Image (cartoon, rainbow, N blue to C red; front, side, top):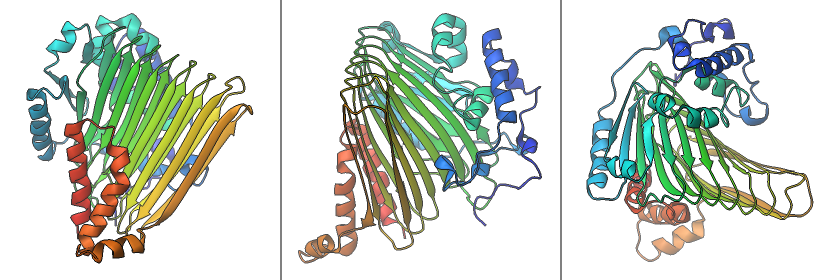
Length: 444
């Protein structure tokens, strides 16, 4: 048995009750949206298995029986990771640290200098009170009940979240690190993040997700996360999503960004953990001259299953996008990748590139890749490509012929395979990611 969810007679058994306490939080406008999200979740059918983005993933794994959800403790690993991140803060490598324990406790460290620059870093509940017009203008604009059933679930039930606002013309020199921790078996969490980066402003954000059940054969833990990022004219944003959740976690995450004229955004989805992780990353290029780059990496082992979807939506002309998503699998791990490029009818003179490469380290690993193009005019330059295969035996032979052990040869080849993806990471985080890769390769 592996990370199983109890089967019930009807999807109505998973419905959100009208007296759920989360529905009563916040001002009237927020309560109205929460209630609409609840209605959408309860009334929308569960996505049919096998259709489009659910070809290879059972949506029932993300349905949560609220009666069985427990308030649990957090794993010991959180303290160890927090010490590492806090040390980077003391060394001056970070502009601030925010820790988020399942939306129940959110703490801030070293953000005084950001506040002095006019940057706002608050609990989302506090931002709603202190900056109501700003939050209401952006919250739920990109991830809402119209996005999908599970996005509606987050929209109704998030407990608290994080809000970041960078004013026009402000450059945040060092990355801001968010450390989100999930509870143990039987727990559920709904992380929510809203980021607004002003005109000609700059921000690097590391959004790290950890924790969860450590036993994939016992009761699962659940996370349903939503991220909304807005880049105004000529802004520059780097967003790193590091998912290293424990082996008994079922994780669903939806990220949407919208960037305006002349804005540039780098998005880096990095997935290492969880029993089942479904991640959706999308950027809307909404103004001329906008540019979006995605560099993703999934490393799966054991019986892990990763399902990733990326979207570049060219809503304006003279925009450029590129995707380079790499997958490394060993043992019986599974990966499904779907990448969509959409270019609107009036969005002329656009360039879009997409590449997905899959490296299989064992015969039982499986990877699937599905490129999708929706191009509504002919004045574009687009290309896509995908590869799936094992390590080149000639490369292994070449290294072994020079006295390098097989395990070291494989490690060197994999490191070279992922190197270009990791180039855009902050240096201190890059070392940790390299450690993740090395640890996976050393597992028996």
